[in-house]
Image (tube, rainbow, N blue to C red; front, top):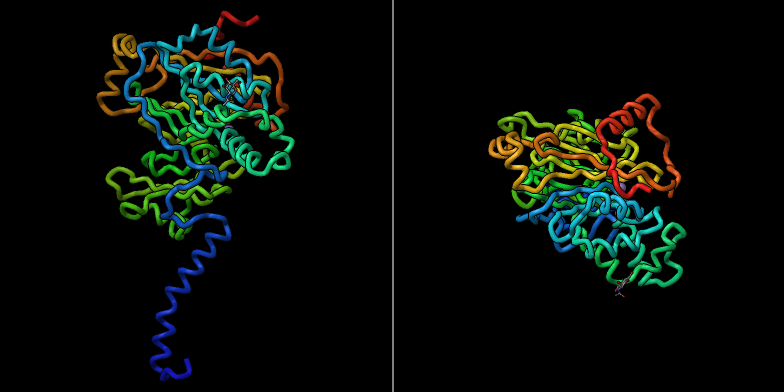
Length: 384
Ligand SMILES: *[C@@H]1O[C@H](CO)[C@@H](O)[C@H](O)[C@H]1NC(C)=O
Ligand SMILES: [Mn+2]
């Protein structure tokens, strides 16, 4: 620096500013353990390899019914529910809403059942955590397993492969539906949805004006290549969405958060579709019946029940539900009525896991339970 004349030193310092800013930005990202916004999603939020297919599409359904089942959490009720439905793997289409494993006693049996039953499933946060634990166990031996994941030592390669291949969403365009474990942010194409948010979020916080002007969400606004969402936002702060509202002038941004106490609204109340989204993850809110989203986690592992949304075969649906064809043709979200959804539940045989977090406020919980009781139709057979 000394050899530079005063004026040139000045310019040299100016030239350094963007470099310093970039460095600080990178440091800030590292500090919150968030990779750069444009990075390819090389790992899941738990550091597992991303599956080959993140967003699975079922282009042609089998000729039977479409059945979406809520969070199993290793509960044997899955088998009772399916037998009460007379599930036929050769004809029916079965999708599980994730959190297949953990907390219940039959995690390995559920994993074995996925290929045996020709089921599809989406990745829940527990599925990813179990896969992470198994990978660490296989790398580090005995010491790598915490007591919570003790059972994971018995998981073999085929069972782990089921977890490793779980996509984050399964879409069935012919029915106008999609399945995700936790939720989706309105206004973003699937490819830009945040991996963390898809299996962790419960609420969406509308971002304040000043928050909107911060750099955090700005990257989502950019052109091609800049839209990729990051997934390291373990606190939910990194994923913000921008919605082009109407002609794209007014924009609403939402920040997905994990816990209701972090504010905002249940994401499913803001979701307008299409598609109609079936999801799980939110056992505290139990059955959620919104116009374009249906929450199916009815807390089986906590002694609640396991719930399925059953839709008729596509051919029957088209013939018997005029609203279905009309809405699909108009590119609108289909509701449960148009989909002729029947909700079928089996009660849990026991409390497999004590709910850890506090239940929702009494009145609200009671109201939700009443709705659930009014709508859910018990499976009839297989209840003994
Ligand atoms: C894993 O265990 C299941 C039985 O639970 C068995 O069917 C499968 O063949 C096993 N896979 C391997 C690779 O050992
Ligand atoms: Mn979950």
